[in-house]
Amino acid sequence: MTIKQALKEKNRLIKAIDDEFKKVYSYNSIDEGNVRPYSTVDSLSNIMTLEEGLIDLKTQIHRANIGVYDKIFRLSELKSLAKKLNQIDCSEGKVSEKYSRAEPSFKTAELSVVERDVRVKSIEEEIERLQEELDNHNATTSI
Image 1 (cartoon, rainbow, N blue to C red):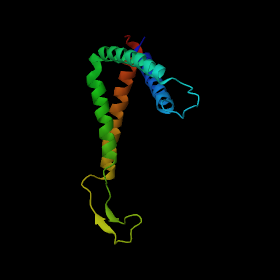
Image 2 (cartoon, helix red, strand yellow; image 1 turned 120 degrees about the vertical axis):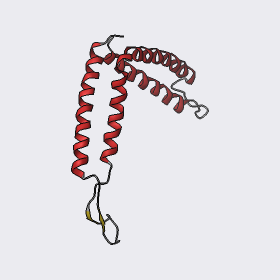
Image 3 (spheres, rainbow, N blue to C red; image 1 turned 45 degrees about the vertical axis):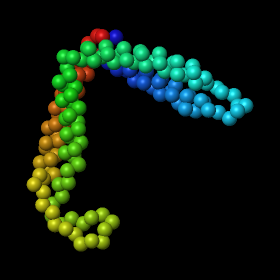
Image 4 (cartoon, rainbow, N blue to C red; image 1 turned 180 degrees about the vertical axis):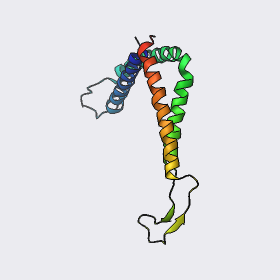
């Protein structure tokens, strides 16, 4: 099994665990006399079995990724950085607040919208390069 396949299996296990918990939440306590379509005890037993499989799979994935953790962490931080940079207010000149009757203000920005966008584009290019490397790693590395 490759890491790519393992990641898909991990997501499938997580969904199966969530589905079992939905049964527990919905059918543990029911009106007396009603039919209980799913057993909470059985669902909890299934959850424990699925959790063991998930723990084992996550351990295997992490062991296989030891050599690329730097790329994984860098990718995560760059995505966060790009998101935060895009939130910077780069307004300049006369600015009126939406839905406000207040007088417009005059703003100046140290970082222009163009400069911000150039930085974000550069970060996004690095994100794309790293993602490609990790996709290749995930497709070719067996666990």
